[in-house]
Amino acid sequence: MILYGARGQAKVIYDLILSNNHLLEYLVDDNPPENFPHNLAIYKPEKGLIQGKKVIIAIGDNKIREKICNDIKFLCEFETMQHHTAYVSRFVQIGEGTVIMPKVCINAEVKIGKHCIINTGAVIEHECVIEDFVHVSPNATLAGNIMIKKGAHIGMGANIIQGVTIGENATVGAGSVILNDVPDNAVVVGNPGRLIKMKQEK
Image 1 (tube, one colour):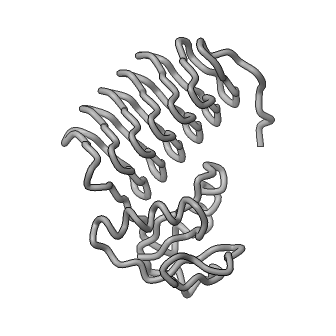
Image 2 (spheres, rainbow, N blue to C red; image 1 turned 90 degrees about the horizontal axis):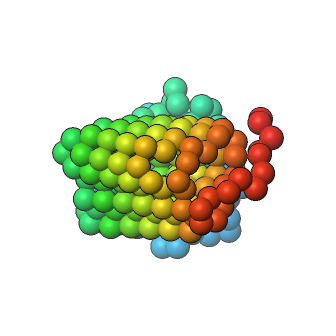
């Protein structure tokens, strides 16, 4: 197995890999740092280093993670990984490349897409749908029947009530309390959540 990315997110996912008794061969990064803990090798990404490998994209930024996925998806197999302390219902669907961090709780009938990050201590209640390339930050809580659309970012400690939709590429700020739907590309913060700006579509 290899990691694409060699910075903060990669350090967390490397620990996740070790906790599951897997072996990490090396890391690749477009702009490699000088070193990585534990003296693991880091290379610039070349086809021969990726082709036929099991890969986790260890990049926190949703847009960059999606771009890398599209660049390499025909070369490799994407690995999904879950920390042993996470509780994940047997009735949950999880897409390829997604990582589930320590102390996460995911309850029944949740659907999680590809290349998502469900970070430490997050709670995702029944029947939520989380589309591809979403990042749910540490200790965020999603009540039941929530839709999180592609590329959205849910900040640390955010709380979202049941039945809400968070739009594509939207950002929910850390500690926010979301009582209503959030539009695509919106940035919403506060308690209750309020719109502070709209992102420029790319």
